[in-house]
Length: 360
Ligand SMILES: O=C(O)c1cc(C(=O)O)c2c(n1)C(=O)C(=O)c1cc(C(=O)O)[nH]c1-2
Image (cartoon, rainbow, N blue to C red; front, side):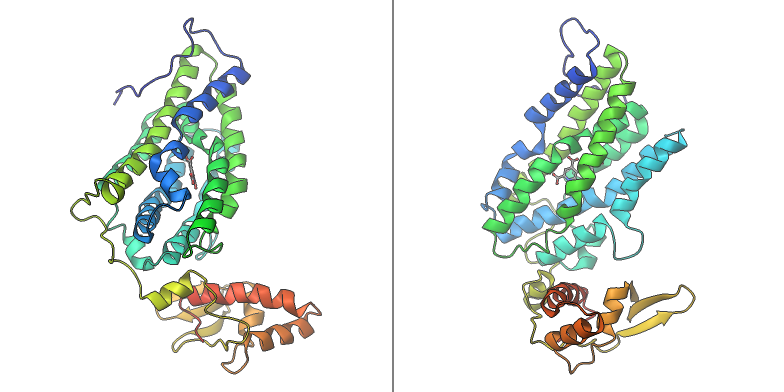
């Protein structure tokens, strides 16, 4: 497939740009085409969407998140240099995590749950707009088919993402009462991951785009990627804003959601407070897996690995002690400030409540 994407002209003379000029040309592409400029994002960040429109965004964007590590594995597979692979593989770890319950995809699922979705529905990817799927899949195909330079250059949209992320998080927290900091936790890590990844990719592109033609290819790859992001928002806008034509089989408001009480928990809206008495629901047990020397919460058909802090808390969750009692016990045990412990364990317990392995 060699169909050209709209390709910016390096300049009339097609001369080789200096590394700084190349970086400036790439930034200029973002300034004109990055998805922060899309009307759907403007509505999202300014609090102009209703809850269902925000849900449509969270659901569709899950497909992008889920495919990113597949895209990165495809890029990795093309790298002949072990040093390069060692650096790139961190991207896969960032999204997949090192263990179940960890990583960016998991955090996106929390975001989707926070706005009311049932996790299984989101993971099934039923209801995702075909246009979302087409455009995300096009990104994966692109990195498989084009040169490594183009594959790496196509990730350079991340140069622009920290700005949009801070704007999005601030705007959504301010403008939507159903959005909490916990729900948007996905973006916390991206604020450091994205600049790290973008710096590396930019450096690679500056070093390897050594002819005007290669520089043109790098710019075209970034343009293509801006279009991958833009078309996803076009699809959302068309289906859920105006004219509001939801395609057959795509998500319709009211479906794929959990009951509102569970939603409140998922959104971390303080269902569990200091005076609540947490307990493990029927069928959920704290166990030590001797083979892996790892404490887990065993739930029907699911297990969750626990870190040492979670184990210390869950060992004293007995269905009679309140969160405040538990914080008091731990404060004594670890000679620490009870109020600090209480704040920390509330976050942890609400997270477990979201996963439905804790109740009050
Ligand atoms: O929230 C955003 O606006 C945004 C933008 C982008 C981007 O610019 O590609 C990414 C992400 N988020 C992101 O979370 C992410 O993991 C990511 C990976 C990549 C990539 O191309 O490899 N882009 C992005």
